[in-house]
Image (cartoon, rainbow, N blue to C red; front, top):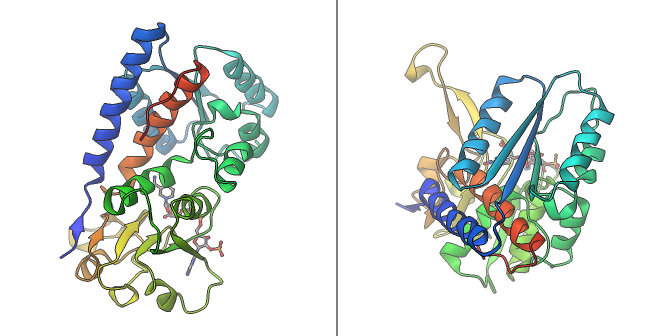
Amino acid sequence: MADVIDGKQVAATVIETVTAAVADLEAKTGAKTGLAVVIVGDDPASHTYVGAKSRTAKECGFKSVQHTLPAETTQAELAALIGRLNADSSIHGILVRLPLPKHLNSEPIIQSILPQKDVDGLHVMNAGKLATGDISTGLVSCTPAGAMLFVRGIHGDDLSGLNAVVIGRSNLFGKPMAQLLLHANATVTVAHSRTKDLPRICREADILVAAVGRPEMVKADWLKHGATVIDVGINRIAAADRGEGKSRLVGDVAFAECADVAAVITPVPGGVGPMTIAMLMANTVIAAYRLGGLKPPKF
Ligand code: NAP
């Protein structure tokens, strides 16, 4: 049976480091780390998600500000708010909850956030820094940054000689994940929906990262014996065993059978998921240190 990574525990360690760094920054400079979360509309799932982020931010000792705008907010009104947050020196991180309502165009909004405050790592400047191998001055998208923390915890900082396969090529996860692995010297293959014979490619992987959005797609016979398996997928499926109309969350990896072949595996839920909020907090305190002209903590 593989070692199962406890994402909640790793996330708690990150939060501890963030909390200490926030207190240290305040003691040194008097500045409180500030995170602004912007949400447009009244989708209950978005509010739950944003609420969890604001709570964690407060736990870390941040100044946490939430801007809840009505669903009918115009592009110009949203852009004006981003402009004010960019100019506000007490705010170090800006997060806009996506997707935005259909009448709003998210891309210009994301690109108008100051790259130094883009704690979601979605600005082209931050994506470009990662792509050119500069991970010391940009901000990296939170979920891949969290998944990479697991990989480094297992294999160390140098992945020389290891084959990594990332299934999925989204801008949000697959591409930045592949770049982080490459930066750490892994030999990286990025697979996607047009890839031929995916099981064969996965069997080459010492490190397999699945970010597809297809429940339990990766099977045990896709794995190299002793592989590290990082499951990023979050899929809700029907669970008749729990009663009528009940559901449960599963990843992109068939966990039970893969745990017999892998050396290390992440569960869903409780694996990569908890790392996303933790890395958002980490990015915010990194941004606060840099904006204050100080060397940020390392995660
Ligand atoms: P996405 O933008 O939909 O990308 C999915 C990727 O999977 C695409 O590159 C797609 O290929 C590829 N794909 C689809 N079907 C495939 C198949 N049959 N074989 C091989 N590749 C296939 O999704 P995402 O935003 O990257 O997210 C992926 C999953 O991770 C989702 O379940 C999401 O909920 C989860 N996620 C979790 C977190 C978190 O834990 N906080 C954060 C982000 C994402 P093409 O490019 O060719 O279409």
